Length: 179
Image (tube, rainbow, N blue to C red; front, side, top):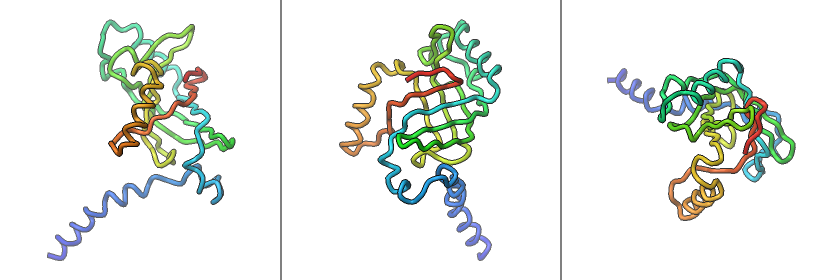
């Protein structure tokens, strides 16, 4: 009976133990005064640098030139990356992450000049941004007008409906700037 009770409490505490691995915010580079006002700080930009740039680009080109409407799962491989977040007060935080192409259809990827702009799914391996470890950087025209998307989610949140936190952020993915 004691073994069953101990196993039960261990299973009950398992989610708490796994969530304790979220890590410190920004590698303990911030003081307590900044930490208290952290929720009021806006993100200036997010920069993603994929470690294996050649394979990432080849994967993106294969999505662009592929003769399909729905993007197959074989093109949604995860790649190691470094994510750098810069806040309004010039605080810069760096995180290790895994990124992949996000989206089911080709509206999530486009060719602009000589650059590929795409939606990206980011999983932070170290640290967090406002307590978030998994987020998406969507291409601006995938869900219609981006201002409408932000307005709608804020309206839903105001009426206490479950809605994602949505922000308009300048991004740089492998030195390619987009909004």
